[in-house]
Every structure is written in C-alpha cells, then in structure tokens.
Length: 233
Image (tube, rainbow, N blue to C red):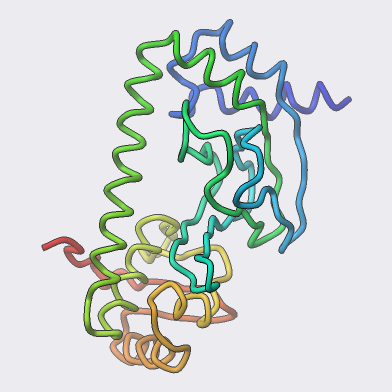
C-alpha cells in the first residue's frame, strides 16, 4: 500500500522543475529510494549539524529553514513551500546540514538519499545546468536579504520583507489579490526584519490603513493595488 501511494503521488512530480530533466529511468530510480512521511506543526525534519543524508520535497504545508549563531542571535531564515526540493545548500560538497528545518504547519514530504540524487544528477548535464541556475537564484535572494538587513529604517525592512514573502509564498486569488496561505506571526516577521513586534505591528497597521494589506488570523492578503516595489537599487 505504501509503495502504491508513493507511485501515485510521487509520479505527479515527474514534470516539476526539480525532476523534469531526468530520464524516465533516472526518475524511477529516485522513486525506488523514496519514502513518504508526515510531520506535525513544530516538528524538526533535521537539525543544523546533523549528517546530511536525505533531500526533501514537500507535497503540502510550509517548512522554515533557520540558523542561529553561538549567542542564539537569529541570522538566517528561509521558507520552503510545496513542490520545492530542499536543502540545496551544500549539494555535492557538505556532509552536514547547515541549518535546521522545522514544520511551520502540518506537512507531508517525500525524501530520498542525497547520495542517490547526487550520483544521478552528476551524470545528467541538463539537470546540472538547472541546478546551477536554481542555486544562483538562491544566492541572489540571500544577497537581497543581506541588503535589506543593512537598511537603517526598521519600517522599510519590515515592508521589504513582507513583499519578499509575497513573491515567494503568495498565491493569486480569484478576485485579483495575493494571499499567503500559511500563518506568519508578527513576532516571526519582526525577527526576520531585525526589529520589534511593536514596530512590525505598526507597519502592518499602516499598510492596512492604506488599503494595501489585510492581516487576519496570522494570514496576509495583499490587495491588487499593492504592487511589489523594486527591492534592489
């Protein structure tokens, strides 16, 4: 029964970007080594420093990637939504995970051995080229977050991080708005922006009063008039 379920659900990923460059034989080989597992909100998939054994791809829910320095000062975060392979950091090189992955909602995920995926990918030029492009985009996003972190205005940092979330996690609604279908707390937004919960709340209120944003039950909805600003100079 487990194998049948994997066959049915994993096969839906055949033409997703992370798998479409593999041959049918290569894809089937990855599927043979795949397991399906559910996690409850708050559970850890892997910790920073753990042996880097498996790659994951979500079928539902949201995962947060995070890392802290020795003083427990938060300095890295990222989110993974469905149909995205992770973690890409350390591919072909690192033997340990460089951050912690936590389920932000109840999730379901496939996973398979890193060694299996890397061995197949190394012999597939199209897949290697895709991975280079994907990692380049990840690096560009990290550079953008560093740039935002250096912005002196806490208000601007919060607003810029909000629009990054919109671009990464937002889903268009039938009435032309964009919603983030996952709970994001004010505290989390504040930590991500290097400011206080009070400041984050003030920014949200300002955007709500301007008719650009709605925030109900920890979920953000960006009104159709809320055009994403140029985040890079």
